[in-house]
Structure formats: structure tokens, C-alpha cells
Image 1 (cartoon, rainbow, N blue to C red):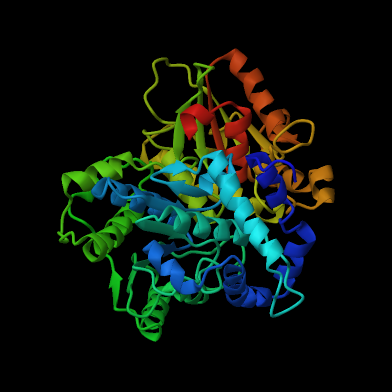
Image 2: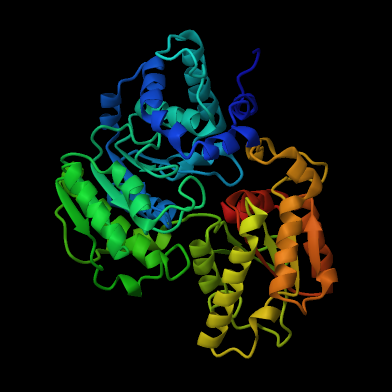
Length: 501
């Protein structure tokens, strides 16, 4: 390869994606394939020149959960950076919104393109040069997420970070991030029914998976959980010989802080982050813990940022258009989304005109089969919120238009390279199968809704074009939900990056 640019790195990375058939085979295996993830990741790590023990130098706070793990990471990162501004703090999260390098951050900023490309190709080349594998059937290079995880580890070790906030990808026990032998703190946000590998599993089974990140001699934290889940987490902490098992109590006065992340549910995530960060700072910076909130902690919580989650933005080029972005993609997270959206802080905010803006929902999910439960849950929560806030509106009339589109970025069928996905079957995309299923579910849930105001579209660019046509008639409020990939694509196509990220 004559060049080693960021674009080259993303093009190479996209060759490592699992296609739709591979994902379906993995699901059909009943999750058996994931059980080789840890030994395979350790082998890949060795092939790029590291031992698992080297990862202890990263001083890791390891965080998982079904709901709120990313937000908890964002709060934790902000707290550590505010408490120790002289430190170099690494943050690894997924997925990204518009650029892969968002997943690997130093002091809150995504790795610069040149740095990402350099670390990426160092990992790429080492795996190409060191081809010895215990199992010859193991791929020369791992799949997408695992490869980016290796790049993150390599980058953080090379840059000698002082602290690392590490978000689990999926689950916990078998997740490829779970090879750090001795993190400093482990924490689990709210449990619920996951949207991917643990679909259909019970809360105790999910708790068992998440509790796999607990480690011997390491504090094991969790928020309040359903009793059957909490029992399993307590047992996992004992089995793993954690130094302590702590169900975090509420921090005095935290509810009075205006958090940098919107939504009532974020107070639980902020509280967990605060407890995890305090334990970390006590161990690694000799900062004496205190029961309350210092001025530094308050500022950290206020200034935390996590784009694409309960995020309200004024369109920078269209004064009358307000975007409401939330990548919520489970029934439970969509419930939180609607609690935020249908509130005086968002769509029920006071207006400078008595004329209500046209409201548009742009929605997609990974399977239309889930559409009825997702959309039904959203409408039910909207009804509850309207009643709570004593609005005379009804949930069936909350939106004036609904748009169901694919996650394809552009109208010509192409993706922004960072947003390319092979995880959707070509036949599904061609026939807009999922989107038609969503539209059918909407018509069933809201029979009087005008059919001409339900749009089934092949790309995000098509959806934004519809928004631009509607906004010619007056002010517009747009909720984008159901998929972080959809939110990221909307930020890209609608030109919101400068205000969103």
C-alpha cells in the first residue's frame, strides 16, 4: 500500500466486518462461538507484542451494563479529567457516530486521523507478520470490533495514559475487552433485556454475563438492580473474589446538578460514575474519598458530553429546525428516550409562538419484527408523559410525519466510509423489508394516521430531504431514534457535526 492515510485505515477495517450471513450463523449457534473470544483475543494481543499483564499499566475502569454503560463511561471520563487535569486519560467506547476514531479518545478528544492511521497500521502489520496461530482456522486478523479494541490497547500503551475508561462491547464474560487481568475498578450499570447476543435471556442470565467483568481483588460496583439480577451479581462478585461488592447509594445533592447529559435516567449513571471515579482516585491518586459532591465533581458532571444520546440541537443552517437525537435501540432505552423527548425540557418546551412546530419521527431498527413492540412502547410512554405534564395532546397525534429509512448514508446507496455496514442482508436493503414492517406496525398502532405522512425511504439522505421540504412550511422538530448508526448518519447528512460532536 503506497499510502497509509486515515481513509486507507477505514477501508482496511471495513474488510473485517462480519456480514449478515456470519451474524446469522453466530446467532444460530446459540452463543457458542463467543466462548472462544477471550483466548483468541489474548492470542491476537500476543501477536502484536503484548501480554495481558501489560494492560494493567493502563489503570482501567471497566464498565458494562445493558442500559447506560456508555453514559457512565462519559461521566467517569469527565470526572477523572477534571480531578486530575494534568493526567492523560484514555476512553474506549462503541459504536461511533460519524468517525471510527471517536471510539478511541485522549482527554476527551478523538484520536487525530494521522495518529489513528499510525496505530491502526502498526497493529495491521504486526498481525500480518506474526501469523502463527494455535488454531489454523483462526482468522489472520480479527473481526471489526476486536481489531479496534486491539488498536485502542496499542494506542493507550504507546501514549502511556494515566487512566483508561473501558466500555464493554457486548455482554461481559466473553467480551474481548475482558482480558485486562487486574482493572482498578469494575462497574455495572442498569440491567435489562439486551438487543443483541442476549436477546431472549432472563435477567439472571444477563447478570451472569455482565458479572464476568468482576475480578479478584478489585471493587465490584453496581447500581440497584432487579432482585434476581442483583442476587446473581453478588454471587459473581464472590465467585470472582472481588475485594468488595457495592450497590452504590445515592450521592447527596446529586439530583440538584444540571447534568451535561439530558434525561432523568442519567442521574443513576452519573451516581455510578461518581462512586467508581472516587474509588479509582483513592487508589491511584491518593485522593481522600468524601460522601458528597465537591465543586470539581459538580463541574465534571455538568460538562460531561455524550453525543447522540438525548441530545437537543438547533440546526446551524435552518433556524426553525430543532433536532432531537437519541440512539436508543432497546425497548427500555426507548422508554427513557420518550421520557426525555415528551417533557418541558424538550418537545413540550415553551415556544415563542403559539403555532406548534411540525413534528417528525425518523426511525429505524435492526429488525422490523421488533418494530411493533418498539413503536408501541414509545407511544405508550408518550401518552404517560403527556398526561404527567397535563398536556391536552394525545400520543397518536404527537408526530405529524413518520419516516422509516435504512441506515444507508446517501441517496446513491453509498455509505460514508466510517459508517459502512455489511450486517444488513442485501435483499433486505433492496426491498426495504424492515422499513415496510415498521410502517405496517405504525399503521396498526395508529390506524387514523394519514398514510401519505408515513414515508418508507431507502437512505438517510432521502429522510433529510423530506425534512428540508417540510421545514419550508414552518418550524420543525425532528426526533431521530432507534439506532446509533441512524443518528450518526443523520448528523453527517444534515450537517450537524459542528454542533453535535
